[in-house]
Image 1 (cartoon, one colour):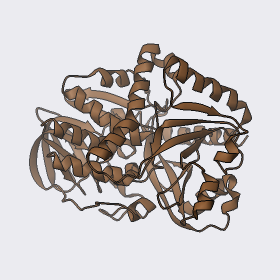
Image 2 (cartoon, rainbow, N blue to C red; image 1 turned 180 degrees about the vertical axis):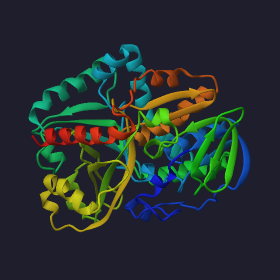
Image 3 (cartoon, rainbow, N blue to C red; image 1 turned 135 degrees about the horizontal axis):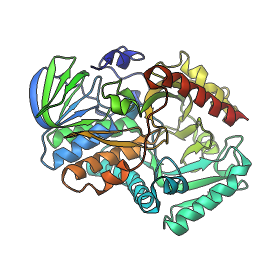
Amino acid sequence: MSDSSLLYKNDDAVGRYPPSYYAATAVGAVERPALTGTVEADICIIGGGFTGLSSALHCAERGRSVVVLDAHRAGWGASGRNGGQAGVGQRVEQDELEEMIGVDDAREAYRIGVEAPVLVQALAAKHAIPIGYKPGLLYTNHRARFDAHSRDYARKLREEYGYDQIRFVDREELPDMLGAAGCFGATLDMGGGHCHPLNLALGLARAGEAAGAQIYERSPVVEVERGDPHVVRTGSGGTVRAKTILYACNGYLCGLEPQTSAKVMPINSFVVATEPLSEEVARSLIRDDVAVADSRFVVNYYRLSEDRRLLFGGGETYGYKFHGRIEEFVTKPLLHLFPQLKNVRLDYGWGGTLGITRPRLPDFAELGEGIFSLSGYSGSGLAMATRSGKIFADMLDGDDHDFRVMQRIPTPAFPGGGRWRQPLLFAAMSWYALRDRL
């Protein structure tokens, strides 16, 4: 049984998107019914974020009957609240990945990650999803000593991986591109980009329904009974009987599936949105309208919205409970990087819960006959979770190459068990935050 009360710790208005810039500018946020009664399907997907909605779309397009269950709304969780960055590759660098799984699998995992933002753009174009995609990701170094590694890593990707979309930006060039304090060199990756994440999720939901998928909202899953078929029961009084189950819950799994819960830990990240800025001010902050993330372990990430607001993410808390004063919490790192924005108004502040793994890499798991889990994107979910939906559909169709590559990435359980792993994570993350400052 799942403790679904955890789904309502921060957002107690069931069926309502939390206030955010994304919710205020969402396109196509229709209400869907809760599941009551019994339905049958080939596939039951638990979770209506990028993973679940992309999986539903790709499976439904291939003629499978699909039911998606979400405790709140489609795109309600981190999928509709994140920084909007569509990254390239995997969450860790290729040197580390090569040591972890070998060069051949590391190359395949990188290819999968390169294809991820390309798929986001292709789906948006195919289904007319208004995500406002813009190219470019700038990764800045907050320590000068990191520059040599960034230069070497960009060279490695170009020469050994044939990836020509990345280049090193030295500390003399960077100030013309970025108005943030405390930055040295950077890498600029034009293979990725940034977009409106909630509109992407809502568009995937519409496309999935057009292909035949059924999406039920306000239908928290409280029990899964394995069998032939598997039986999924919801707190809304509904039941799904399905041959295949996909857990696509990420940070909102809430103990529903213990094996995955042991490996995927919920943490919270927070974002603020400024008032709209003038063109001159906006370009003085980020000249080329790319998305930016820095080299801190507790990363700062930011970009400009389509109406020229600075969307800035910074700070984390561990567990399900949000910080009580989000705007104040995020203002500290915001003004550390952009002191020139001291008198700029903040119009929105919100939080979201994501799922992380120990190696900061996705957890692809086959948990039993016809039972799968895809989660733990560790902050890179917009592109990679969308890509995972296609990987899942390919696997069910017999092309399991990419699924097996990702499955071979080791994602060990967090130490400490249910009682101690949260305090241990807090201690570890606090140490890394201190290391960032030092």
